[in-house]
Image (cartoon, rainbow, N blue to C red; front, side):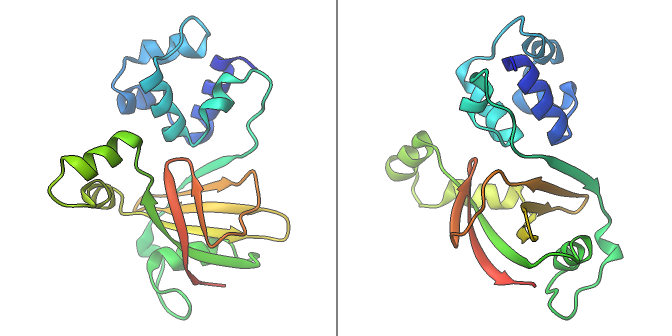
Length: 192
């Protein structure tokens, strides 16, 4: 697969239109179209942004032999349709339990942004207080995250007010703390 084919495939699996991806990257839709037809390449900053937004590695995008080994499904949900109770401490918990009744294990996760080298440097040298980047990230991201295990697969599930994003993981996660893309996760409690 070429870079353009991988970009288009990953964008579609993440549920973004060309225009939506362009907006998130602050580029024109025609730039994204040009990249997807292999008539141009993004600069390194846009490449980093693409990898983070689409939850793929830069290596995957640039290596012409590798195929995407995870799938992503975005579904619209209404959290008002779910009630907390029993093992469900929140409506998000209830939504995940309803979506995955066949799950062997479901872990609620804590997510923190993995800081870039520049952000680390700024945090240690310029910022008057530590944790400002993580605090801003937490304010901007009000989603709940879960690690769902079935008999044969694992899924990373993100529940926001409007969507449930389910990503089939390419490798089995056994650690209590792990990193996926630009996010660090740790297990908080078990739902099932």
